[in-house]
Image 1 (cartoon, rainbow, N blue to C red):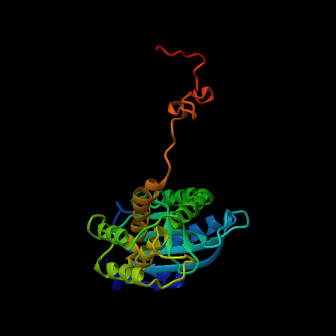
Image 2 (cartoon, rainbow, N blue to C red):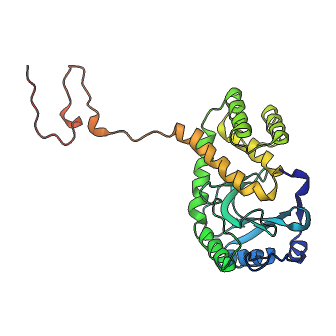
Image 3 (cartoon, rainbow, N blue to C red):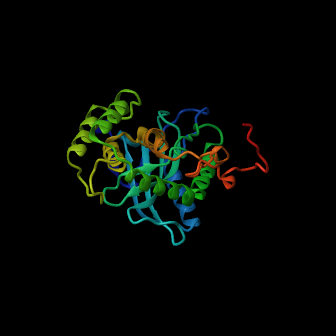
Length: 279
């Protein structure tokens, strides 16, 4: 995953990197255009950027921006804040991506809703205009998606996840999903033995603790893969853990209560006006 090639950098340095030339078939969208467009759009929609974090690989051929946001009318949570992130490349290794997510205050671990980070636009033709439009559409969904992430977080806190189950999920994330490498496996295992942060939990044998162990390890992920991996991991946890603990709607029309005398309660029969029994 190229851990050593990713580093935190300043906005001014990122904007100063010369643009490459790929010919007419590939429209290079500069990191500066993405930064300026995202900031203008965020401020236009009333968001304050409380913190801006930029990462890039060698020569900034792949770059990433992460903004921690606040808004006077946006939903809030005592443990998480809203986040907007983007990924851009000059070397054709990845398509432009952006999405709304959340960051955990105590550790800066990130969450990205699975349906947001999957969009990518190839750098051809009208890429500049398309990127600006997609940034705007993502920001327009910010409140709804952040609320969903908060709900997911609160539900994961209630789901027990013993060490053996965590180990099984960890193995699948490595071998099947390929979202973690051997170095990150070690990071998650170390966090399972003793978390680096206080997540305000009575114990750490639950889904929310495991989620943070993994996203803590994702901090070592290359900017090229970070958004994809975050998105796929949230989908994984949603399908494997959250969905399994979500009560399914019950067909009330098939439910009949029988009282202590063996008599069917008529009020429990729906859409039936008259019935008889043949003895």
